[in-house]
Amino acid sequence: RVWENGEWGALQVVESPTVSLHILSGVLHYGQSLFEGLKAFHTKNGNVCLFRPHANAQRMAQGCWRLLMPEVPEDMF
Image 1 (cartoon, one colour):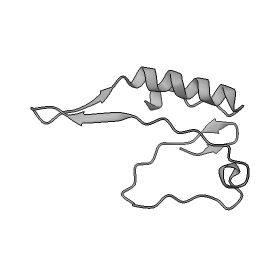
Image 2: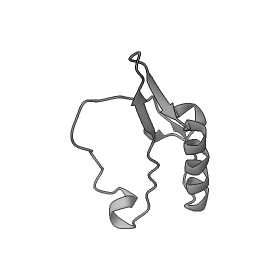
Image 3: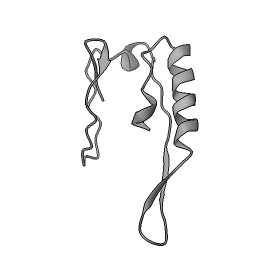
Image 4: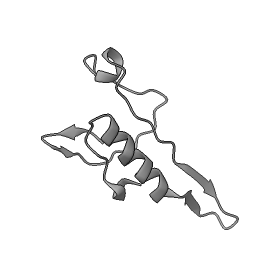
């Protein structure tokens, strides 16, 4: 998602081995970034399950608060 006009934009899933970052991104110039890995796995019947997404959302929210960044909505997880 992209943060624009005071809110998070629509989620986009893309098949790409690269990540595009704007040259003025704070992560490149000031080291301000936050990453929270979300674990997913296939079950025997072929479903995909997420491992503790609410815990990931809470850790992400805490990190955003610490870095004075906009919080990511829990429903993204």
